[in-house]
Length: 261
Ligand code: SF4
Image (cartoon, rainbow, N blue to C red; front, side, top):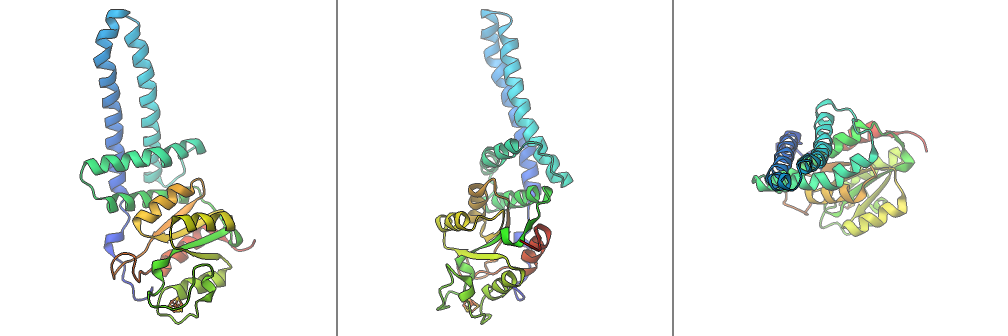
């Protein structure tokens, strides 16, 4: 239950990992751009002396674009301010640069969970930086099925309010929180159902609880919808009787939800 679940150091967001990888990516982009220019420019120069300059200008333009995007991400993380002036740029970063950074991290032997925790922390900061506030009726709390007690006989997928609040799992507190605040709440057994719920409920803000893998794919799939991801706690191993820290959920709701419809 949430009150009994200790805060687990293992789940502390690791933005520093991502910032380090972003800086590394900047250096790699510039290094590769230079090599791409330097190696063929010798041959191009023998065809026409202007060709290496033209080729270099194109490569420099591309390298500047990529490093500018990465630098904006670093600055957003460091300052906590929304520095993405264009939604298209944010899209490029979330859809394409993040996976590339995760690939670089894997090359350097950083484990997938750490990278995904970093991604989730970074995404949350980007959402926070936008200072999004939506009415309760347009918010959705999305939960994984593993939060429900494995032995509970009640089927709550489809309607969390069927929970009789026995308190054997964290669904009780979450269902009560959602009822008191008038926020929609749903349990998804997988990505397909999660997408269906989102299409049906049409939220403008999602607070999602899940493991690293599901949150990472959910955040990317849901873009451009703003999603705050909160990691579940797994004292019994993955996908089995997992827990949440209710205060984390409440704090995220306080930050992004305003009363009213
Ligand atoms: S709190 Fe609700 S979902 Fe959890 S075990 Fe009790 S009745 Fe089942």
